[in-house]
Length: 102
Image (cartoon, rainbow, N blue to C red; front, side, top):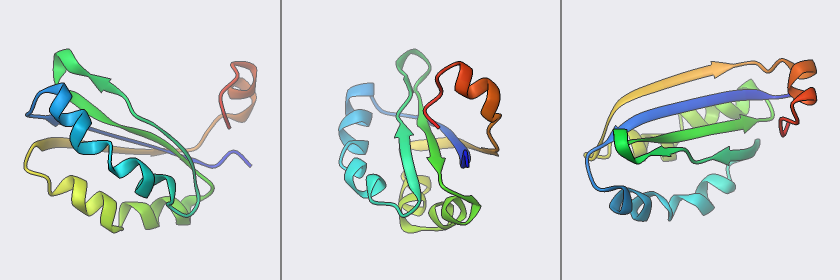
């Protein structure tokens, strides 16, 4: 079973250093989310973009996360805007060949 992939992106209106300092304390809370296998924390300082790429065990775990308090906290933060949320399945064969961590 490969799981469900979630991509969340947004713009931040503070320095990259301030952004990193603000979101880093969420790492432990996100790591404890039921059904989450891993999260990657992308940042594009030049474009003031941040977000996450998440792998969940299943659709239910992913939906619970999207409807939960962490996402509510992030989406209501005044320094974050222009959110995008993409959900997808994973192509297991090609992902295994390219060493994707699924």
